[in-house]
Image (cartoon, rainbow, N blue to C red; front, top):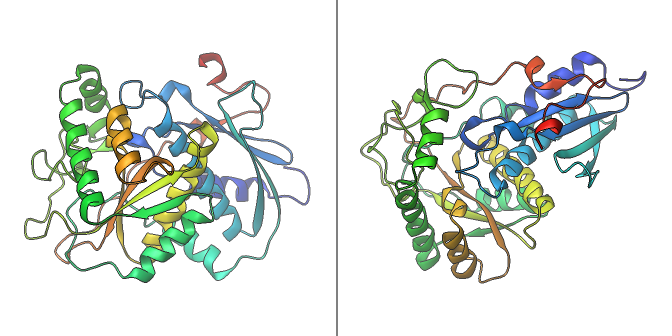
Length: 334
C-alpha cells in the first residue's frame, strides 16, 4: 500500500484473521486483492455449492463474515475501515472495497480480534445452563450494529425452528446431488478446506433437530446433556437482496465473536433456510412476515465434560490473494 497506509505485514496479518471466518462447509469462497489504498474482497464462485446453496445465500453470508473479520482485525491493528459494499454492479462477485485510515484500538477491538482465533463452530450438544439475558442482548446489539435484527425463539417459535431443521435433513437425505456435495466437503482428515471429521459429530450421535448431519464425523458428543439446551436465534433482514445477505454475514461474524468473547459455544445453522418452503415457514411463523431469515444461531454453554475443539484448517494466504495486475480468478467463472 501507499506510504502512510498499512505495510504489507500488517495487511497480511489482518487477512490472516479475516480468513478465519466461518463459511459454509468451510469452502472459504473468497479471494482478495490489495491495491495502493484499498483492499478488495471477491466471491470465489468456483467454490459455490450449487446443490446445498442454490441461491448463493450461504456464499454471500460467508463473504460477509470474512469482511467483518477483516474489519475487526484491522481495528485491533490500529486501522479503521470505510467499506464500499458491492461497489460495481457489472461485477457481482466484487463483494467489497475497503479503505483504511489511522485508528486507536479500543479494548473492545482487541477483545473481538482475540476471539477470532478461539472461535469454533461447536456442533455438539450444549449444557443445560441458561444463557444470561445480558449475553443475548450483547449478541443482538452486535448484530443490530450491522443492520440485522435478531429474534430470540421460545415456545411455538422454537418448535418451528426445530421442526424446520429436522425437515430439512429429511429433504436433503433424498437429494443425491446434495449428498454428493456433503461427502466431498466433509469428513476430511488432511485438507486445507472442508469440514474435518474431527470437527463433526459421529453420524447418528446428534439430534437432527439441532445440527446438520455431516458425513464421516468422529467428534464425540457428550451423552449426558440435553439436546434442547441453548438458545436458537434467528437473524432477519428487511430485504433479501445480496446486500442484505452480505450484511447478515457481517452480523453473523459480530455475533459469533461476541459470543466467543463471553465464553459461549455457538454454531450457525443455515440448512432449513436452504429449502425454499421451509424458509417461508420460518419467515411466516417466526418472523411474522416482518423480514427475511438469513441465518439461525445456536448458542449456549459447552458441557464441562466436552473437550476443546481443534482448529479447522484454512488455505494459505497466497492461495486466496490475487495480484492486482490480473483479474480475480472468479471473473472468468462468473
